[in-house]
Amino acid sequence: DIQMTQSPSTLSASVGDRVTITCRASQSISSWLAWYQQKPGKAPKFLIYKASSLESGVPSRFSGSGSGTEFTLTISSLQPDDFATYYCQQYNSYPITFGQGTRLEIK
Amino acid sequence: QVLLVESGGGVVQPGRSLRLSCAASGFTFRRYGMHWVRQAPGKGLEWVAVIWYDGSNNDYADSVEGRFIISRDNSKNMVYLQMNSLRAEDTAVYYCARGNPPNTPVDVWGQGTQVTVSS
Image (cartoon, rainbow over all chains, first blue to last red; front, side, top):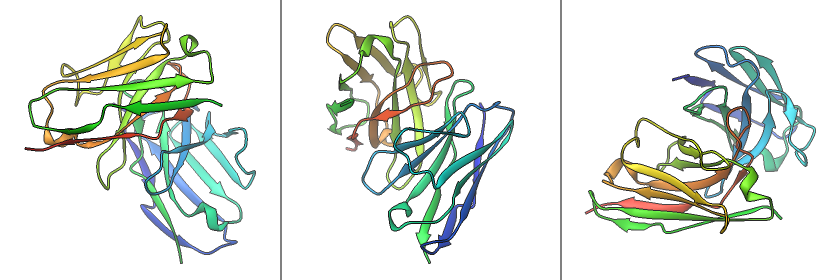
């Protein structure tokens, strides 16, 4: 199985900050990586696919990059609605696997 | 709009069975693969199972292989998860989600249904 490791596990930031979350795969997954945002008690929301393609309706302050084994999710200017937990997911091969999550909290 | 609505969750004793259902609407269901993903209390997301758009193939996480069965009825726009020999560690919110294997992400999620395995 492909292991996905996110860092950091928790990130404290302020509104207006630029933040970056890293996701590493235990083997190459090409660009078959997605990012999700989840708020407490809610289903995950689909943000990015194929490592860097923004899902329709997702604000342009979100961006993704990377290929192979190292990927990043960047939020260019944090808004109050962005404080949530973020997950990466590889869909290169089954079983699909998720990172353990990065909790983005208000500083 | 695209909608997935799960049902069938509840409290069940260890070793018993439960069947989850997911009703899909707002898209051409028969063209999409469907997944189940779960989230234990306070934990991250864990993929459980997938079924291909036509039901011709499926795959399972090792943690549920041999105990859970995913199925679908394209005439009713429904996907199911039959959960047998339930264990305490199966306690989670179960999400139904859309995604076409092999190289398409999960893009639409239901609201989830809670399954609690406890004596």
